[in-house]
Image (cartoon, rainbow, N blue to C red; front, side):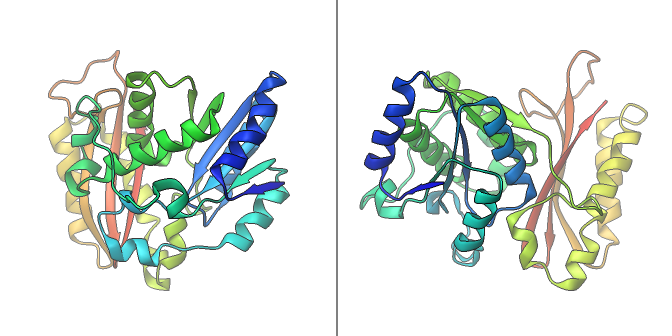
Length: 281
């Protein structure tokens, strides 16, 4: 595996790949890698001639600076994991390499997607996401880029970014990877206390029960039922549960059989914020 810290050196290397008409699969990450990340790398390897991974903890997408400071950084282990799945290239830039001296976000219009769910609770978050993903796409110029569906809103926003800025890359969403007890894999899970880790699978269990109620009860009734489940939970605090149209991310007043819907949730386990979602039928 080749490791680059300089964007100019990476660009020069990838230019030779593109001259040979080879496809580039790209997986942007913030490190602290787990099986979910590795599944994306394996997919990038399978469907492209070369797999590129970036590890960069992006400061502009953190509305909570304490969360940025505490975000787990495990580069040595990440390198071992990437080598175990035969990743071809790792890009590990510094903040200065990406932003120079101007660590600020661009402002984006994602046609309203950015104002739903996470956008209501994390001020400026999606401007930060758009800024770093656009910058990385310009550096790597991938054929295909792979993202997990745990961050489903982010996935839709990146698709919108590519559409509105005419970036020539295909965005591929991949299934959520879960622990054996159902908890969605996340780099933040390692920060959970023993009590909160044992409690956290309740999130997915509740989502599955909400899915069964969807179609029998209306959107308001299902939402209120989920809120009630968390009110009596001793270790988990619900920030929001929302049923939304997969394309617009807006909460529907009337359910249409031809449209796809998804239940989205954000929960605090102590001071660790966990998100998850589930497809609804």
